[in-house]
Length: 501
Image 1 (cartoon, rainbow, N blue to C red):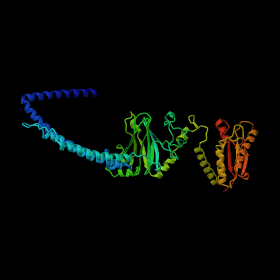
Image 2 (cartoon, rainbow, N blue to C red):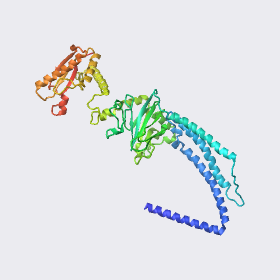
Image 3 (cartoon, helix red, strand yellow):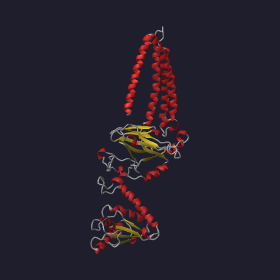
Image 4 (cartoon, one colour):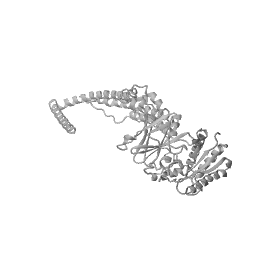
């Protein structure tokens, strides 16, 4: 129905225009063509003057009205170290081109009025004027030179890459329909290798997990954090179509191109909290963020730095918005400590893990730290139950007391603990499930405990500080009614016997 009404309106307007044309023709026939031509010239001249004034006033009024919201003035000043240089370049370009715009606009419509057709007036044709040629060639050339030189200086400053000896952090942004995947380096400070051929449903970035640098890389959630005052280098790439990495408040904008990595370097200089405090000075940001909730938070309280895609990359383009929080270094460190390695939590020891079955260096270090903390807590505890600790990564060959090769990492942690606390005495206990003969299980558990003690004494731990005891299947942790529970009962533990150290 709406479409039909629109078509009827268009049809009626067409008829009106045709009729106006016919009336104009009849008027010209009645008044005479010369008379009509003179009237039209007069009206066109005055309308040109009217448009000159109306349009010029509209340009300045609208520019002033939207200068804060759309042009980066007022509350939306740059929040990055390089942004002020870009803003200055924009301001200079705006002033110079604005002067030209005003002059040409006035000249165009004023001349249309001043030199309109009048009775008895004759046009004068000037074939050539050296002075005019020089002016309109030299002035634009000087202005362009100023703009280009300043632009090159800004480009060389803003687009300069980091130096090897600079203090900076590097993150990676991968655009895809319709999401940004942001990758942070782990504690080693280095992003691991990628290979698009390794991309799977579980490994969307194609991270090469044979590269140790990928083992601690982090893929955070929706909210991303950056420390204020820290130089950030962003690797930028796309998986499918053209995207654009756009942080408007930091004056950062760079295409994300499939198959062609780009980058951008910037330094945040205002935390989110500082930027909010600047916004609260403006009336526009002291209104409710949600008009439907007049008592709710104000606009300045809900403000967040946002990452957007500045390319129309598809119907879901709007959903690529991500939140960036700029915080103090202490706040950033606290957030970063909560992040977990993507590889260790999502890939490790699964079917697509190329290191499945191997003990990695990062695991050795992590286990050593956890073991040391566990021993310290056990020594400080007054509860007897806290004095018994599992040797979680000590294993034996099936039906044998021979230690597996990887057991040495856990036992070396125990050696370190014994050396750290030279007065500590322990009992090493072996346990089995209930499969098989109880007497055989007792013998096997005793032999396994003795194997652990021998490993320790071979590495300098005094035998007088160690006891080996086999308990067979007499102290199960869980009922022996499933493979999972029986696996829990097959274990090696040690108990701290020294009450106070």
